[in-house]
Amino acid sequence: MIDFFSNMGAITWFVLVWLSIYFIANIWIFLWRFFNLSNILSLEKSTLELLSNDHLPTKKSTFNPIFDSKSSINIQMLNIYKLDTVKRTTTGLSMLSVISSTAPFIGLFGTVIEILEAFYHLGGDGKISFDIIAPIISKALIATAFGILTAIPAYSFYIILKRKAYEISVYLDMQINIILSSANNLDSKITLK
Image 1 (cartoon, rainbow, N blue to C red):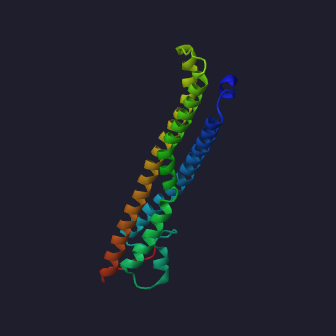
Image 2 (image 1 turned 120 degrees about the horizontal axis):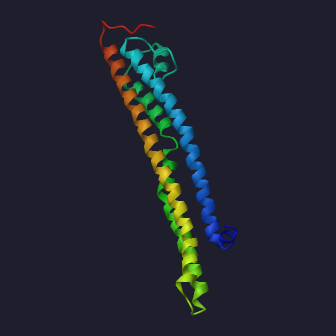
Image 3 (image 1 turned 45 degrees about the vertical axis):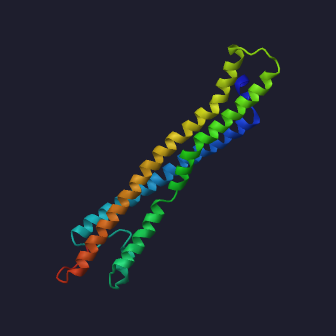
């Protein structure tokens, strides 16, 4: 194994370090956003339940500033708060998308450079056999394998987090509909719980 890593070129080392940074960022972004979005999602679910039962939310939810201001409720203000929340919930998703789409290409770049370098050094001998080429190619393919290994979880994490952000958006839309229907119905009053 030590011989394997000692024979790698500078470009391959650079590619493996780059992909390692991507992999660590990938895990960190996922954990950070997953727990954050899970908390927001549970809060918005409970807020929806309270609003459905004609009660004001007791916890800090997206639309609490509107309820606290005692001003008239309008759809524009509700949409502004919703868009702000959607913006916050999708933070970090673009980085996961970048990692999942570029990691295989970075790995492939390292493989191509390593193979080109190997063929350059082998070309002078004139005696090329499978026994000589096979270890060189297998060493070169490590970069591609690591690129794919980095991209697969990044894409999976991106889809998981995107779905959570979508669910939050749906809960916010349902809350907006309940708030507007309560505000438009003069006979209905939202009471404090």
